[in-house]
Image (cartoon, rainbow, N blue to C red; front, side, top):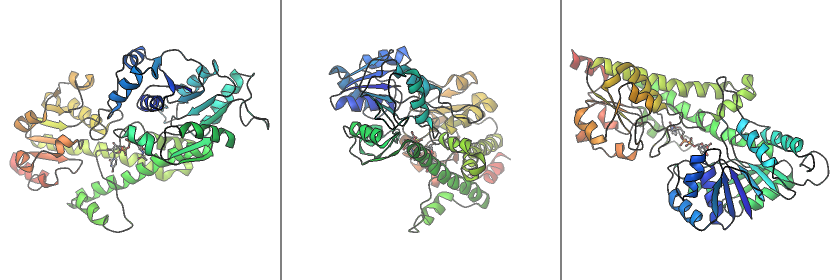
Length: 426
Ligand code: SAJ
């Protein structure tokens, strides 16, 4: 079996490597020459648990290669980004470009699977594009005749940091343009997926993916809204959530500085964009989660103004704990806003960054380690719950003024509230 994976990013590269491990010959196609070169030398350009060892192994055995140019294959997996524009309109340009590339080598018997998160109807658009570019091939669903190629949608559902485990163990939803397409794609996924593979149609599979991430966004928004109300009422929101979750049918998620990443902060907009009037809850959840970041910036600004000149350590830039991914990160957004205002007072502790993003460095922020932060910075703003921050014992930070947006240092707050700080400053 020969497989071409288009897009060697956070999903495409691990997927290509896992398929290659089954013994299939896999070629990973990417537009970035640096990525192609890195993979061909057996190395990885992204941080993901155990990925480096897996890639170096399958490349050394000759089962995985990367290339800038498309090649004929039996199965094509599209794993390219689907960003959105200023007006939150989904941009499926990369998907259509990948399909255009595939069209140049597509042959009867091939299977094309789209994995990128996509608005409902995208897989049909891919089918229509392939039909237009390759009138010699019968595409599925167009007529009653048996098609020459199979086209399906099978969304990735893996959690960064657990990608290699979840690629294999999670259940997969496989939506075919026709039931026959779904069965063809199913036999491919069965090669490496241990979870259940459930078949449906392409539109239902597309909406399922968007629904999963919108569900999580709405639930995190609930926690974030509670955190603001609780703060006004002087109540520890993390304690309230712990206690409420003892109810057998309540399961509240954790508040934070907002929702980041390229999935949960993005995908709900695909549903809102498809039906703005019909999605007030999903839209409001997005606004609540984005608004939480602004609230954190306001609280931090108050704290910094109450203690003029005191050095500040911002703990974390990543969008969630123990990863090096800063995309759509609320922590990064908060640090950018604080650095713009307070410049050289701001130090950043981010064990997953080799250097500070240019925007922060240019505004005067410095990258330091947690030990220097504990030694030199009386103010600490916890933005990411990295394990290394969690592990700082209470006595090492007893004299700090802390704004803890992740609730990892619950014991640090008493005596350090803003009124207390104002008294101290006066
Ligand atoms: N977050 C909170 N509170 C919580 C949980 C998360 O504030 O209780 C924040 C995180 O800090 C982060 C953001 O939400 O900023 C998203 O993190 P996440 O761990 O919930 O999810 P992602 O973005 O890493 O991965 C999600 C997953 N989707 C679901 O859990 C429904 C993953 O399974 C998907 O494959 C992935 O999106 C994707 O690619 O769509």
